Image (cartoon, rainbow, N blue to C red; front, side):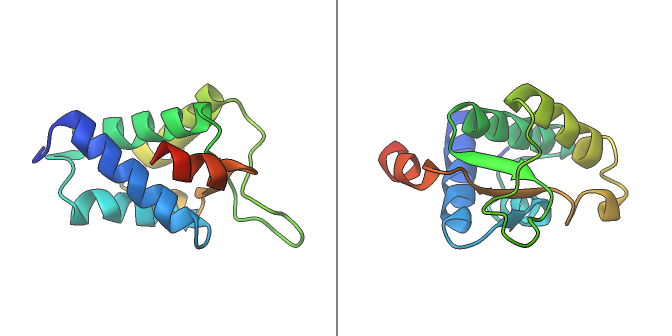
Length: 123
């Protein structure tokens, strides 16, 4: 990893929240942020970084995660607890990382209702 863990976490968190303030964010974009910003040295660090940042943002109520919303849906939402959501992400993104069709556009993030207000103040 090229940055200390907390710096990498803060960078990833900031990038996800910024992207989510404009539109829903697919997992491929989160993965690309880690690569482009050189936030992790290998896949193990990548997976730990992504899952820990996502877990924290879910617990703080900043983002929701789910399938791409259909008509009338305001945000992606599997309706799972933060821990259950991270386990589902782990099963799709980590365990099946070699099968990009299983995760790239099947996991989406959006600002949770009210998350945009907290995201700006959490800075």
